[in-house]
Length: 433
Image (cartoon, rainbow, N blue to C red; front, side, top):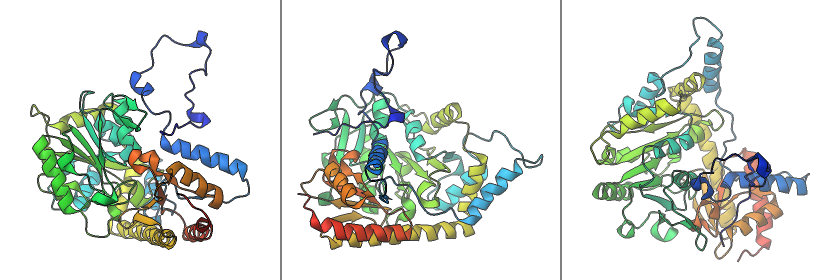
């Protein structure tokens, strides 16, 4: 059965909230009406609140919503503080900057992350984060385009497609939208879709390392994806937000694959590798070689969208981005990344010690834990009830997430050790089948 989400009070959409004589004459968007009742992460927050009301003395450990926990390195925070203080001086004050981002940061991103990939700084658009860019990229295309997503996948790809009118109706029997192609990604196919049985779509959303499964696509797999898009005249929207976590030599960018610049857009972020989840900074690469079916360069339309819908990332935050990519800053954030990777190892050991199948955790800060035959929401609820640990039910990432939970490795070391202890001592007693 499809789980019916309910918003926390701040996100209420109850149609009876206002008396009828207070209604306007403006019709609600049919696309908004077509969305599932609520977004996944506010629902998790609502359940956390209810649990804390039920157990006011419990120390809840949050391994659910993927929010970083460790302090931003001093050299990076100091760069932002310096920029902020400069704004109080005549010499240091600056107002609006380029909507596409400061040239120095765009150049540094191209040099640091796309060396030898022929990505030019003019193709890099600095933003306030990957999630906002997902919707800005969606603005490039009309409501008639067809969309494919990994199953399971990050909810924003599907929900933004619904908002832009590309999804069709939600099918209650299977929890899928009728016009979206769901590319099944399971342990049986190494979490990479069978492209030989995947119908052509205009847009292919693909995330690697993947959220929620924590798995990274290999070079040979991405070669097949690029070839598939090239043969079909499709565009890949590639989310590489977790690329900094890759440890096994898997590609960190779609543009490492020859030919990708003709068929792909890449979205990425400072959030998870630099601790900028609250600071907000990301980027999107739109190659000049990428065009519509009439030959018009897509980068020109994206530039127009950015200039119309966005006044540019904060100059204070961009100073922090530059500091992240300095030699000192990158070494500092790499130490924090290693902290989260070690956390993942601790949690993997805990779940595998309980006999669970665990995927991910090596190339991403997420573990994808399998509870065969179980409802993911019931597993989520049982773990929260018995251990006071928040996870994310896999079903929230689509039908392909049923019987899984996603576990985040973000957290202080003592918190992760405590979580491991609670899981090991409590879950042995319960049968989730």
